[in-house]
Length: 100
Image (cartoon, rainbow, N blue to C red; front, side):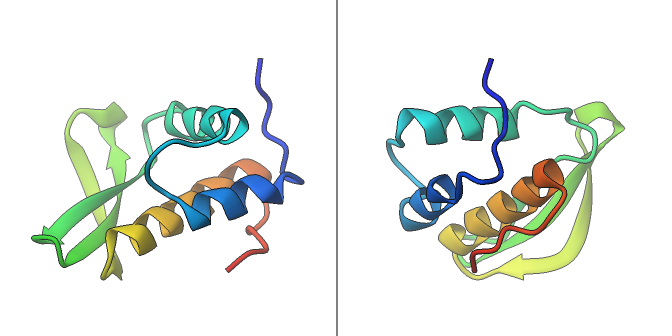
């Protein structure tokens, strides 16, 4: 069973450098762990302007289609994915990711 290790900053750096495509096995395990946690309250992205803006939202009502949009927006999908990664990391680690 894979356990989250907040000292593995190398995985965060790997993700930041390449958020899309193939990842190392350790990073893929981490992403799977981040993406398969409880659904209620999970961070997701909503494209609010086609290919130009993504807004952070949170799933509600056990993922029955209900979303709660935030006022946090991103102008690129890469920035949006990195932002969500950092938020999920913080949730799991209990502390902010020390990488901008």
